[in-house]
Structures are given as structure tokens and as C-alpha cells.
Length: 288
Length: 312
Image (cartoon, rainbow over all chains, first blue to last red; front, top):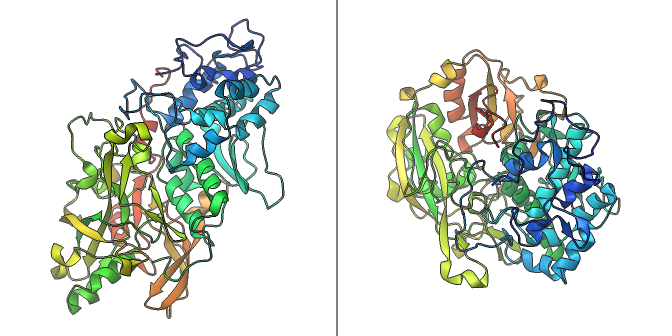
């Protein structure tokens, strides 16, 4: 199930509109803003075909230029005809990989419609990015009912990261997965549009211009998160010091879907903040 | 010495040990209690890789698997060198696309006291409304054993059955039972994909030990046939500390972390491939230094190849 991107141009393959006026439509919404609003139908439990053009007066569900949406989809879902992978769960709601994680997220959201409106009505692209990185409501939804462990939140952030890189003239093959740590109390290094997840201690970025430890993603978009993560020259947490970081690292080496993996980072960090499971000093025999 | 014995264990009880894999040392220590002295002295054990007991195909989803086999609960036939590694990459690329493959391949975490353990099975249908649809996917561990005297092999399955690994073993955690076992002769395998290539990469399937506190263990540099300096300037090779437990003693190890990929500058890729299975460097007897040779650029993600483009 591609999202209506058939016929979109491959970045770099043809002359494309790189200054952000959208993909030929006469819409007035700059394309970076459109990237954050392109999947609002998923947060409202609607199919792409049933997507409305506006949500409470905000233009939504527009096509994202430069093939960024289709490429981001390939990072998290199989190509080709989708299959229902969890037949008992035919719902737009995301299924959790960590028990109880969705209860925490849902507890932060009083009214889904209001929360979605607060998120997408923002008109400034960088402010939209900052809001999405912190947002709870899109994490309640998967990016496809066929693949309920994917995340609409991280799909959207990946679309924006790809689009921002493509608009700067880069091809997919130029992109890196980059990581950065921030000390306690210091601000996270958030790069507008290119930071795809932030936590209290580290951030993960998709960028063609890494200033920090990074691993090349590959020539074409595919579900390769585990592969790229395992090749990172350094991980952004102290795996030598605490077992919980080794647990997270081990899990991230297993997950191939990008949006699933990024959502797992968020969920794991939230669980850690709650009660730091297994993060005490190493216990004798812990490495056996 | 050209033979290995692959062993597939079912995880019977939650596991609270090393999160990346069951270390070869943990498996060796558990097995050593059950075997005779000659076997104990000669046996070498790989790290054990966690495998979900799910449907799948070794050709990475290329074949429709409806009504297929639970590849995670069996040892696939090994005819070519690549077949050795079907279960040894934690991303488990063979997992079927018609199931929620990432959910199946992520360890469910359980709290035991103040420590996190990996559950012995993954339950699907956790939300309340799905209780009647619960589906259980068991976890398994794949490892292989070998010896400098092939007469030691095969180790009888009943000697491997019921071993316990990881923390809280005395409370029953980490119990493994044998599901499948087979002998593989590395000399009889097909290495044609390596013979057909002219440039190669090395993937560290398990960490390579550079430094060890273990008595009389020398510090090692990486083998001359690695060419890590040729990597692009995005950070070099990732290092990680490991610990080697010998009875009550714990020794620090400095390693190049598993998962790293380096160019190969040697001229005998097939010989290196065979050596890589038997492992190289300090502590190789206990699982460290397992290498896989790949044709350069072939990558670990097969879908990257053959993409026509524009048909998405």
C-alpha cells in the first residue's frame, strides 16, 4: 500500500522542484509543512482514499514531493502488496513491543482530535518538527493497519528527514544514520527535520551531512535499521557500563523496520525513566 | 578438523544473561558438567544466537511461506557456506513477511527482582480484546560446537539437554533443551559465491578480542588481512568491553564489537572463511572472533539488490 506516490519523481533523476513549493500542485503549503501533515488521515483512523483535504481548516493529507513518503514507507514496511500480519488486530492503533507502553502514551492524550489539531495546526516547519519529536498522539497509531507494530509518528519524522535531505540536493544513497549524546542537563542536539528521535540522553538523526558518528544507510530504502545500527562506529549510550543499555542495543540489532525501531527507542527510554529496570550496578555474574 | 556440530536449543525458562547472545563460555561451562574429560578438554563452543521459532525462508522472504516451515524451530540443510549463517545474524532476515517479523524478533522483557530477563516465548494478543487470539512464539538459541579432534563429535544430545545459562540458574532460569542437532563438514560446502568474487568484506559475527586481563593472554592487534583503515572517515571501528567469567574470577576484555564490517585485504577468502567459522584470536575457544566473509558490496540486506526503481 503505497501512499499515492505513483509517478512521483526520484530525487536527482529528473529536474524536480527543490524549493519546496510542492510537487506541482497549486497548493500554498510549503512542502516541509506538508510532510508533517501528510498522514493525518492515519491519526483519524481513515484510509488514504478517504482522507479529507482539510482537518478543522488546516490543509492535510497532501502528497509529499520528491518521493520522500514512498521511500520512508520502504524503510519500515515491505514493498509490494501488503499482507495483514496480525489478523486479530484490524485497527489503525499501534500495537506495543513493550508491555504497558501504550498506556503511558495514551495517558498523555486527553482527546485525540484536539491533540492532532494542536500538532498539525502549527504553521512554522521547524516548530512542527519540534512538536512532532515530542508528540504523543501520533505514537498511538501505526503507519499501516497491515503492519500494526510500525509507528505513524516515526514514519512522519522519517518522511520529513528524507524530504529535507532531498531538498538540499542529496540522494538517498548519500544518507547516514547518525547519533549524538547530550550530557545531563544540556540540551539535546536537535537538527531541524533531520533529528528523528530524541531522548533525555541521546538523539538519532538521518542526514547526508553527519557531524558525528554515523553509518551509511545504503543505496536504496529498505528495512535495514538493524543492519545500519550494528555498523555504527559508536552507540550513543554506555553499553560497557550498564546492562540496560546492552539490552536496548541488542534489541535494536534485531529490528529491521525503521519506524518500529525508533518507536522502541522512545518506549524503552520511557520505561527506564519510570523505574530504571536492570540499570543498577553490575551484579556478579551478569555477563555470563 | 573440518567438522562442526550445529545445535538448536529451545529456551525453556526466562533468560537473564548476556543480552546480545548466550556466550560460548556460558554454554561451554554448562555443557562441561555433563561430558567426559576428553570432550571437556577439547570442546570449543560458539556464542549462541537467539532465534524466534517462527515461519520463514532462508531466501529472505523471496518464497511464499504459507503453510511453510517454522525455520526458527529447525536447523536448515547446510550445502553452501552462506547456509551456515541463516540463524547467526540477530536480525533473522529469513523471517516471514506475513507475520509481524520485528515483533517476533524482539525479546519480550520480564522483570525478575530488579533485573530484566528475556521471556522464553512471545505472546501475541496482549490487548484485552485479543485474549482469545493469543499466539505463542517460542524462543530458541542456535550455537555450534567443534573440537581439535573430530572424534569428540557428535556430542550426544542427551548430554546437551537441560543445561542452564545466564543469571539465576539455581532458580531454574535459563534452561535450554535440545530441539535439533546436525553435523556439517566445512570441507564439503559450496564456496562458489566467494570464488566468483574478487573483493571481500569481513563481518564480525561475534566480538574480536584485542585485549584480555586473562592470565597469559596476549594483547592482539587486528589480523593483517583486515583493512579497517580503508573505511570512510565516519568514525572507525566500534569497540566494546566484554567480561570473561572463569569460576569466581571475572576478566575484562577489550573487543572490536560484533556487527562491524571491515574490508578484507587477504588473498585466500575461502581459507579465511573456514578459519572464521572456527574463529580467530584470543578466547576464540569460547565464541569470540567468529567472522563471515562476504563478497564486497553484497551487503547484509538482500532487498537492496535488484531494485528496479520507480515501481514502488
